[in-house]
Amino acid sequence: MDERARTPWQALARGRYLRSAWPWRAAGYLAGSALTGIPVLLVLVLLTAAGATLSLVLVGLPLLALLGLVGVPAAAVERRRLRLVDHAPAGTPHRTPAEPGLLAWARLRYREQATWRELAHAVLHGFLLWWIDLVAVVTLLGLPLLLLTTPLQLALADDGEVKVVKLLPVTSYPVALAVAAAGAVLLPALLYPLGALAGARAALTRALLAPRGRELHGLLAEVTRSRARLVDAFEAERRRIERDLHDGAQQRLVALTMTLGLARLDAPAGPLADRLATAHDEAGKVLAELRELIHGIHPQVLTDYGLTGALADIAERSAVPVTADLCSDLPRLPESVEAAAYFGVCEALANIGRHSGAARACVTARHTGAALLIEVTDDGRGGADPAAGSGLTGLADRIAVLDGTLTITSPPGGPTALSLEIPCPVTSSPTPRP
Image (cartoon, rainbow, N blue to C red; front, side, top):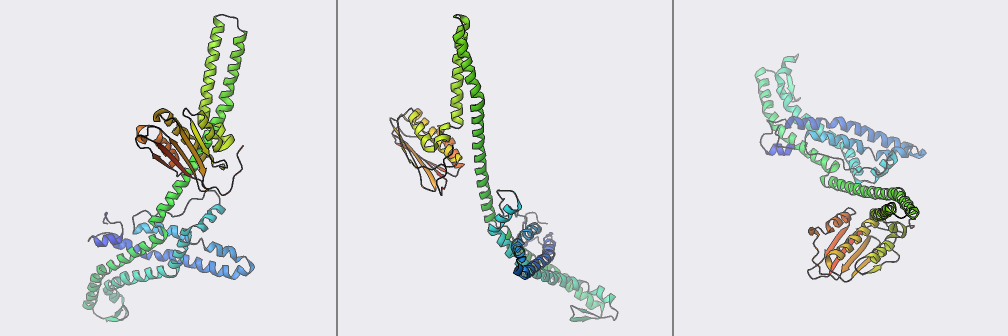
């Protein structure tokens, strides 16, 4: 077999077709079409007849509904058969259901275009294509083989005469050998159209059952959904860590600080009191650092008051005076979106305080109904470069995970404008989370 060729058409164009296994692979592919076409035809006819007959008593309606899924298993078999004559991978165009169970699987399948393309292929294959494939194999391969066996047929004939293809009478071995020679010449000649037909059938099957563009689109959609699930899982894990630290380690540190404070008050003046005072101060510092860590993992103000209150809190605590122009009726958004927006503004204001030399900054936030738009501007020196390690690259990655975009305009001399846009359609105002 020509290892460079991936389809019969490529093998035909490269001149080594007859010396490869492609002719026999093509013949096997076309001959095997009947093995799948006949069962598909029977299932289609039986389900249609039974469903139409029993639909008057409503029993046939599930059968008619099941008819729409006949193409799914048939297409899976055809995609596997496609490997005989097409080495390119033929993956399934179907998506994975978001929920387990047969009902979720069926609901998704009925909504996919791939299911109806597969049903169309099943109908076409069951009623027409396998007939064409079988006739082609019998004609293009059976005819020369029949001619090649003419001497054997003559030897087995009782009356000393055989009619080749029911037309040409042969009564002598020289004529039989001549007919066999014609068959030997005709066989390699007819293998070329056989390979071309197999290539055409494979191309039709791939176009209907495994289109490359739709397959890539489906994979991209699945990657997008899995990325969203990972973001949600990451946010849930952040919340769990924050809750564990708040309810566990922080409470123990608070109790330790109070115990050290009481011991410090009760201890007489001297070295012991000084050591208790030092330990009390260190415990207070550790508690303050732990609170800052918990706030960095998931700020409580974001949970309690939403994005509007959290952004207002950031503006009040900023090292640079900030004017906050926030939409008062900003709805509660998914936790991953609110967290990304909150930490994005935190990073932007931190960069302004460290690098810009700005006297003032401004934060605006609004929701358009389809996306959250946030803009952070300052009157600093400008020249912000995401590649300079300012944290803007990480911020862009955080926003990109949610299919959002980060735009930075920062000419030398300023001003600098940083814009965040995160898609998050909101059809109704959700109930605020506690």
